[in-house]
Amino acid sequence: MEKTNLKGLNLTQLENFFEKIGEKKFRATQMFLWIYNKKAKSFDEMTNLSKKTKTKLDEFAFIENIELVEVKIDEISKTHKFLFRLADGRKIESVLLYDGKRKTICVSSQVGCAVDCKFCATGKMGLLRNLTLSEILDQIIVISRDFETEITNIVFMGMGEPFHNYNNVIESAKILCDPQAFSISQRKITISTSGVLPKIQKFIEEEHNFKLAISLNATDNLTRTALMPLNEKWQIETIFAEIQKYNKTNRNRVTLEYVLLAGINDTDEDAKKLAKWIKDYNCKINVIPYNPTNTDFERPTKERIEKFMAVLGKATPSATLRNTGGRQIQAACGQLATTN
Ligand code: SF4
Figure 1 (cartoon, rainbow, N blue to C red):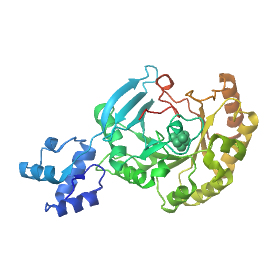
Figure 2: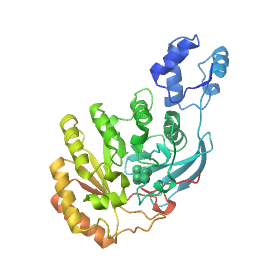
Figure 3: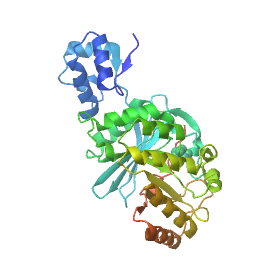
Figure 4: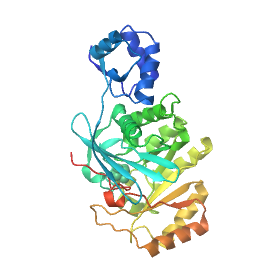
């Protein structure tokens, strides 16, 4: 029997595993608590397991741990950027953000990304592979065990397109909100997508209560396709049609993400069009001034950002300017990338 990585299994899967190796069902709950609540790295740390059980576990199972390689801290915002090495040597980054009482982990879902948004450092890597459920959860386990115990929010906005790794992202979110595991409220978990339409539809059909964010980044299809090639397939109107469906079945409002790029999507006209959509479709919008990385795009001036927000703010109260922390350490939105 091949050894099973117990990290990444839900309670039912753990129960099946323990049944298979001839152990009592309650062991599954013990294991679930040890891995996700007490964040144990090995069977040795599990003090309520007998020596005999540990020997059996060593024979049939293991707990995979990702390796923390480097931590960078932005002194101004306290933003932490973490570099992790995975079992196959691939590397990913995650970010811990502080905003008042809010302590948010920005989680990666893939090594690289296939979507190729032109303003994004991860997009330049191409897709190397999906993360396993264990690797997704371990980012949160390590950060909350070793750096910040009171995590309040999770955003799937790190490296990768979460909806290209749909099952693992959704299953990890379910474990994150389990009261016996991380106990994070469903409404404090945000899953972001660049607009992968079939998976947005699936997400709506499955009626999840996790929050949904969609990267819009432009107010016309020509500009959006130039910035995000997937727009050729799934255009702005089709995305808003799905938002309309979502509004009928879900109390949460969709958040639109809008990276503000100098001379590309930052005119007063863009702000007015955006405001209209937000009103018509009952969305919220986060405007994120571009964080420079290895592309030709530029961040708009402070004056332009203020004017854009003023026009938007006049028309809708649902617009927020997000000056994401960590620019100095390349930890802000769109700046994550690793050499693999
Ligand atoms: S912005 Fe997100 S979806 Fe687009 S390339 Fe970067 S990681 Fe992928």
